[in-house]
Image (tube, rainbow, N blue to C red; front, side):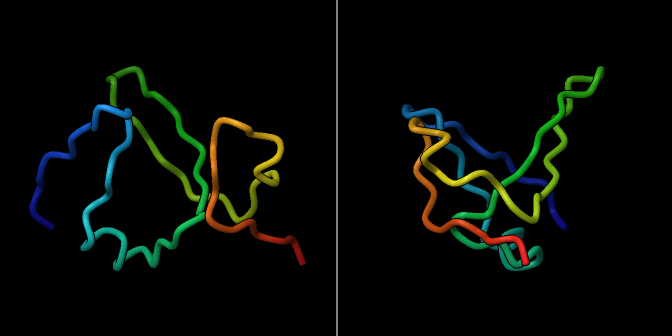
Length: 68
């Protein structure tokens, strides 16, 4: 996959390219953990489930996932 830049908007949001979203089957409301490596790289790891949005009043998720 060709490397392309991702820009931060004035509201500090980013958009993952469509090719990545489709390849990883990402959907609105998916959540991630992140880790900043010593090299400065940022590692995103998809989580199966996140706390309901009420726990994060600054973040609005399109949907919440339930644990089976």
